[in-house]
Length: 177
Image (tube, rainbow, N blue to C red; front, side, top):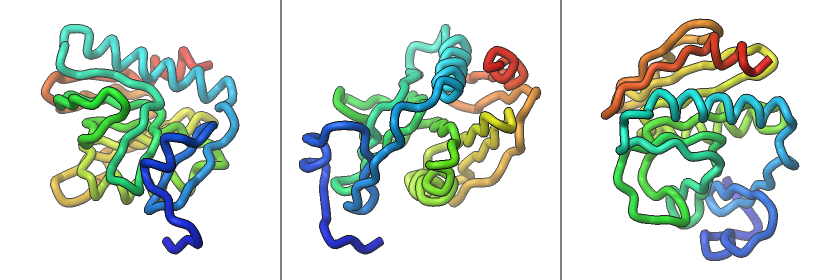
């Protein structure tokens, strides 16, 4: 990407509103997510929290900054991290799972740009959730690149992490309606 102006985390942390920064280029996030986006976000976060109830190492976070480097800061919808990260202001190590809920205004960013960034950072699982289709696409990193696991609508999936977690997407989408 090429921009007229170049920004870093030092600039980013002073901005008002919700932004992401990719390769020094500021990207405004859409206005507050619509109700269906929020309902789905909280349902997914809740399901992961239940799945990790006996695991004190894995943490479920929502809309927190993921600082990849000084000029790339992303704000995923849901983040699961089982790694020790001493920073309180943002995540600074690759999370284990990132969930992005797709809206028409962010689809290209989530499906292409963030996909490539998370793949390069070796985020173990990347989940793209499509509210209108009531579908989740799960990608798992094989050490080199993402491999698509499958599309999930009513099935369960067991995530292979330090603490195992199984999510029933049938329950996620049932509660979403």
